[in-house]
Amino acid sequence: MTNERHLEMDELLALRDGEESAFARAHVESCEACRGELERLYRVRSELRALPTFGPPRELWPRIRRYVWRRRVRRRLSYGAVGLAAAAALAGLLILRGPAVEPADEWVAEATSEDLGPMINRARQLETVLQYYAPQKRVYDAPTALATSALEDRIFVLDQMLLESRAVGADREVLRGLWGERVLALEQLVTLQVVQEEKRVWR
Amino acid sequence: MGDVLTASCIYTSGMRAEILAVASAEVARARAGDLEALEEVFRAYQAPVYNLGRRICGNEEDAEDVLQDTFLEVCRSIGRFRGDGSLWSWVRQVAVSKALMLLRRERQRTARSLDGDGNLAGMVGRGPPEPTVPIDLEAALGRLAPVTRAVLWLHDVEGYTHEEIGELMGKTASFSKSQLSRAHRRLREWLK
Image 1: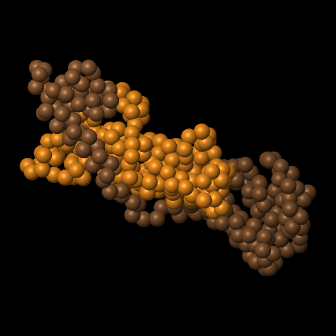
Image 2: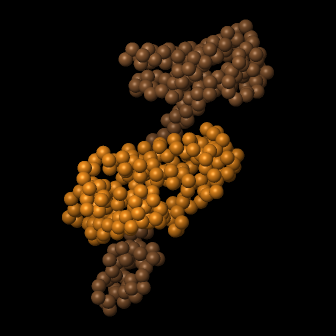
């Protein structure tokens, strides 16, 4: 060794990473111990990069997808009556605020039909009530939050099923069943909000 | 999926690990909120994100949290991805942030005092009793204090600069350098 001291770890790392000082470069050329240490640092870095890769132990996508759905449902509800109920609005039954939606002919037909019209109108009324309670902006206890999320998820799934049923020209009975379920889920969601509001008022 | 997926290297310095890059058409669909395209993004990057979380946090449970939190954020914010860099770089940045956030949370929960450098005990430098015999690299990584391990992994494996690490951790580049030195001193002792 020609210089008076060995390199410190930070100096060796700077050398390895190409940020060395003139002193460090000169020293390592003449010092076998520091050169060996530098080689060791290169080797450790290579070994770190060659460590086996861990893979996730279980499937997480379904949980993430549910969250994305739930968030979308909340956004739908926060904008008020959109999507399916907007079809009824644009058919002249309702006056709604929110983005304009072009109704498909079959949606208008459904909203004015004898069998589906009353259910669609009822869904619209419940959505209007939910606009007042704005569940997506409220803070609940855990059981209510879970129940609210589950109902929002259910409504979203029913909307998807309704859209798909229309797309494949499903039987009218199927549409009635889906609309009935949608109204039921909306009623349960409204009931949850009313109960929570009463608790809040009397607390 | 209509487009062909192409392979690309995660790391810049000749590493063997490879991941699938998501085709640009898929990225466009994902940015528009298409759930199938978002799933493709998840499938392409779940393994490297999990591995990153596992390496930084040091345990399965936290790594799963990193994976979940990362993709919840990706699904929420992919519309804001500008597309001027690779999608993987963006996803990795989110993953690193989430992993470091978990470390911070853990630090707040467990630490009770500050050491002389202003670092919280239990997260930097102090660990279990010294091993009496040489241990392998995997075990040595597991023995490092979490922040020290995170700096080591981000710098030596992921290729982040000390300035970037300092910024990610709300510290300085010097902090990152000192942690890297500490990590390698420990490894030298333990791997002999």
